[in-house]
Length: 395
Image (cartoon, rainbow, N blue to C red; front, top):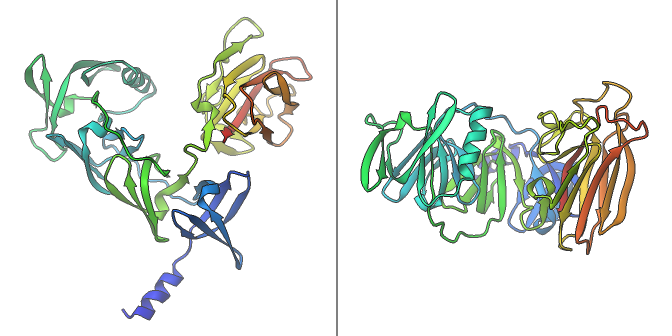
């Protein structure tokens, strides 16, 4: 193929459609022409919009294709990356990971945990409890019916799926015990984590994987990523759901722990504690047919207080009654009050009959942020399921 023919092919390649959100709150849609570590260029009709990357919060790819379901291991790295793998093994101090986007090897000290067994709601809760458990040893986790148990020791070599022997070497009380890999639900590593490079962005894939990137390169067809924990991956554009540049610029309220939580149930039955990243019924946060990955769900007579220490300039969210209860009756309304250091910044009624309401507040210098959800004009708590979708603080 001649150089000119190659150029014609490249020119003919369709540009991916994107939605870009900036720190100023602007949202831009178009086709992604160029992406570097300094600039994002978007084509809108016949014009090109150049956005400094320092002003970009997130680039979303709305047409990303859902990945095929995988039954392989799920690994979490010390840099926050989470990947579904086709194979995982350890030899010496190196962990070998194989995924649909490439193979890479990292130090075992950079592996947080790996999970081989199936995932259910009950097992997820038990696994989370084990992850939060303080230990100086690695945990070899096994499943007995629907209960997880563990043995503490030091994990050695782990056989890959293609190894007929299929053993995991585990040092227990000074003795090495070979354990059949198919008997192990997962491994939680407790090792001293070395200093890692700074993450420049987080790449979210359509199948749910998350990659913490120290470097990236974009050529219009693929996104090449150097993981903070080490290793290079090449992701087809069809699998990229979003590139998030919000680290050190944004804090989502659902990632922060309130310094105070108050809830006064109407019937003295504590049914609706606030929830993070889910509706009060446990479903995805959904307003007017649109789902949100991040946000808070609160019921009437609930108050959350956050110590934000004057570190932020704006508070933004989308407020509305969750779609799961819209239309059930005529009492779907709440009074939303947001205050900073005791001064009201927002005080309005939110009704299910209203479209989702964007909130953008000046919180410069605010030390304590308080969110109160009270009864609406009906003075009842029926279907008072308020979502603060995409609730975040900006520096």
